[in-house]
Image 1: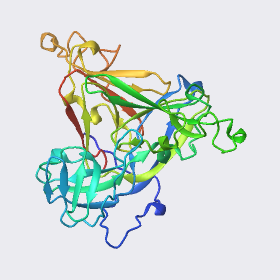
Image 2: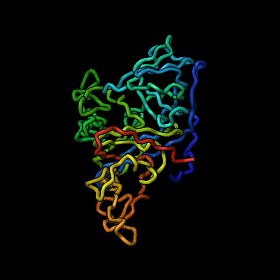
Image 3: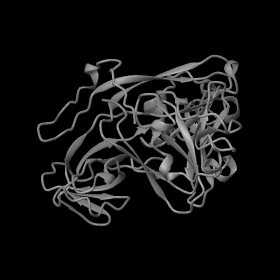
Image 4: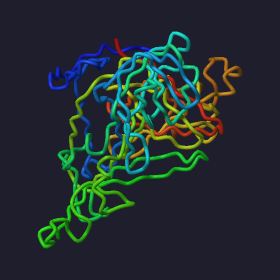
Length: 371
């Protein structure tokens, strides 16, 4: 895979870690990325985005012991219940990520949420299985949230209204494990009745981040966005919106879980990628056309989905030219079976949807795409 030379867009002294004397922290280069969210004047008002800039690491260490639900770090300095919390959907607010593992390089990039921390036992309880990770290096980070990405008071400038229908919407997608899509919808609500309510809250649920499940909870702003998660934003207004996201740049490989069906995923790194550069081909089913293949969906600049697949042409051996009569073998865009699409670009900060037919879960292990 061709690698890009990474040039930091900015050096941000603000993000230099503030270290407590007892805390060990692993630091990465810092910078920022501008995420452009397209308006309806450019097309359908849909934009798929990633959140590739990471919150600063809070702790780093080496795993000295593990079970199916815990890790131990004999040199840990955390306190009881440190790095512990749940968002409105019950997802952990902090996670560990494996950054190096000489015993099994395929585990690098694994992300597991933290449920509890025990000072006396130097132990973290996790919401996934970390067994076998003894000797691996890891960091602890706090997850991004709706508020940390788009602003506690919508500094991003998304269109606001008094309900979901009159606002721009941020979509988070969860795979239900059976191939189905479960959508969460988030928007910034402006309650016009706040001035009329003696309590200052408002009669329509108040002003702030809200969801399709709650128009009144101020906690919605704390909804977690994992580094591997993609988002889709639907604008209802003309004009683009630019979200500037500062943070740390991931310098280790990534690992993203891919389930049967549709998976809305991040690209993990703040650089543009080609289809070939994604390194995703080996985990996708390849057929002689789009309908018989797994697919990658990307929202283009007009807000429409470009659909890509890896085509295997069974007639290549029969064609004296070695190309094949069905368009040849390689990356293709739906509707263009004879045109090589391997160099199609996914811009920095975008997300993709990966559709996989296979029932078995797999992992997309992606390497750092820059030097």
